[in-house]
Image 1 (cartoon, rainbow, N blue to C red):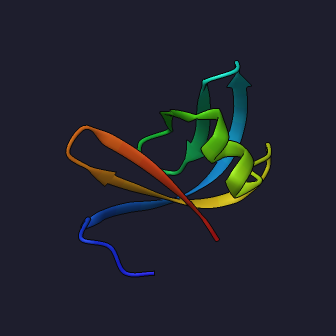
Image 2 (cartoon, helix red, strand yellow):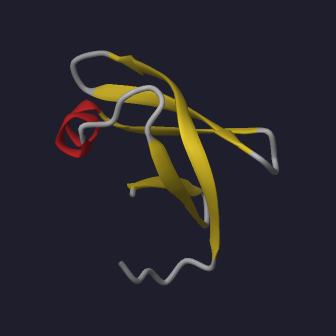
Length: 69
């Protein structure tokens, strides 16, 4: 998948905390050590994200976007 974002990191999903509307997903990355993203719970379910999944973290402006590999 091509994106316009130039900053990306390989990462592993560390934890997912969800309610009905939003989810907080934390990632382990090599540098920096950790990052986090807030996204809709619907997106977490659609991506079938779970702890331990490998993802690519795409950073654009103030957004951290996980891309499941």
